[in-house]
Amino acid sequence: MKRVTMTEINAYLDGALDERERAEFESVVESDPDAKALLAQHRQHVEELHRLYDPVLSEEVPPRMLELLRKRNG
Image (cartoon, rainbow, N blue to C red):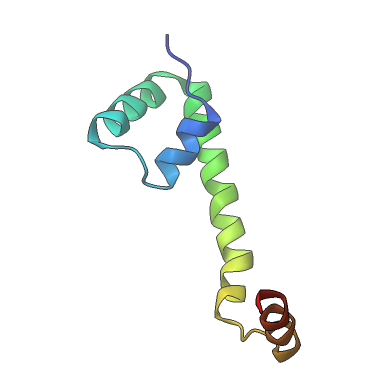
C-alpha cells in the first residue's frame, strides 16, 4: 500500500495537485485510516494558522519599516 507523504498532504491542501494526482491521493487517503487522520490533523493546523495570521496581511506596514526597506533597497 502506498503511504502519503507530508509533501503530498501540503500539495493537496494547497490545491497544487493536478486532477490525476488529486484522485490518486484521495484514493490512498480513503483506504488508509492513518493517512486520513494525518490529513485531518494537518488540515486543522493549516486552518488554525490562517485564523491566527491572516489578519496580519491586512495590517498597515509601519512607516519605520518602510523607511528601512527603502534604504536597504536603494
